[in-house]
Image 1 (cartoon, rainbow, N blue to C red):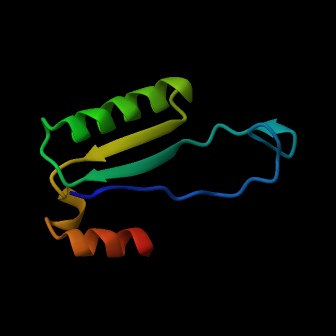
Image 2 (cartoon, rainbow, N blue to C red):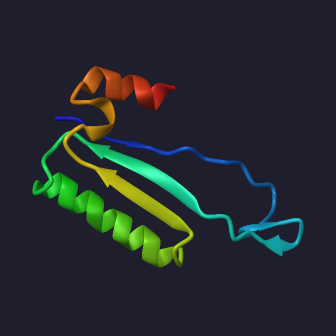
Image 3 (cartoon, rainbow, N blue to C red):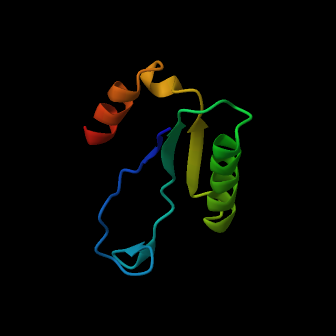
Length: 85
């Protein structure tokens, strides 16, 4: 069983979420893919993770959970390739 999360990071030279002395209000959306069913503990954990991240970031970070290999069409190898690109 493979559980994968792809995060794309952007570098920011400002401190504490600031850039050029101004707070950044940019919203970030991340995709979280699981190989398991909607009701599995892995997917439920991913959904809880998404909820906590949204709360802790005051909505600035959104994590969309895609169970059942939705992003890779059921092909785990393709899913791994997607992470690498």
